Image (cartoon, rainbow, N blue to C red; front, side, top):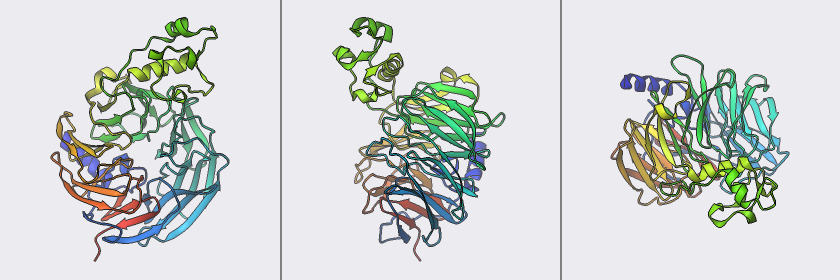
Length: 468
């Protein structure tokens, strides 16, 4: 059965464009693609190079074209390039009416666009959603925001069943919204009881029942009906700030969540708000000022991170999220799909809690889960059992990692922040095949098509392929 599911997944992946963040189903895999060079550089096995404005979105592909987003001053850009030559075919801009708060690692053009094969849908936190056809004609726009997020809204939109779906996990007023792809009208919008999340959701079509959007959030992963936004099932036990994207392999879902202060042994059991207020709310106003909290109850990070509405005080909701955060645990979960309601106790097959990535999503390839942690620690786990197959440092690439890994041709490609692309043999006992150095930072995840890899650096897009 497992072999059949894997074969069916491979067929679906090989037939699809790299139409969204991490390609078909967000898997990071290009099944049945041709050979991609193991060794390359700015001067080796480069088919073409095109300079681009600043942006951290990943490239997507459809209809012999490549699409990326970028920002140039107050212009928020969607750019189309020819796959064969790298020539810019068109560049469209919208003006940013505002500037959202962002972490320095975030960017105004960080979310990756998505395509249905006929249109491009791009999201900019400074504006909202915008749609173009393949010739660059704007079809509609939907302003959204302003938002309230600790590090800035960054999840990429996904497409399914004629809808563009976007998760907006702010510290207040979080929601998931589905927009009619043809008109830009809101089809449904559902509130989310979460705080700062940065994970791109996953489209899932079960063997029976409605198509689903699986969206990680703070402390809980939730599946919604694409048809109407109804909550179908959920799994608890997640950490506070999900950044990785969930991955589907057969009938299993894999999700990694890591937040500073939530590794094993760092948990703190804080009292409920009623007890804290009774002990520390000196002026009895029902809120907690930082000066009122005893030292053991103070946050380990910034006050802004737990003062979700930014009013200088903690209310009961904010304290409850803070209390949950201090008690939560980082983890990679393997979740068996199927069922409704709370599946936390029944569907989590295994959990792994050591040396987890911060931002990069897992890659499930050849029945192995590959993880890449900052500092250059690579881990391979058995996808069925969670057993560690190999864990070691990537000698020569001991850097931070913000792009996600991709798999093709029996190899794993993963980019470091400062422009090294590590190539591994895609086995449980992985080995380093090459470390390829570029002269610019890399935050975008590569795209793959046939026998080419499209790599975006801080200032250019490269087409990597065998030179003849």
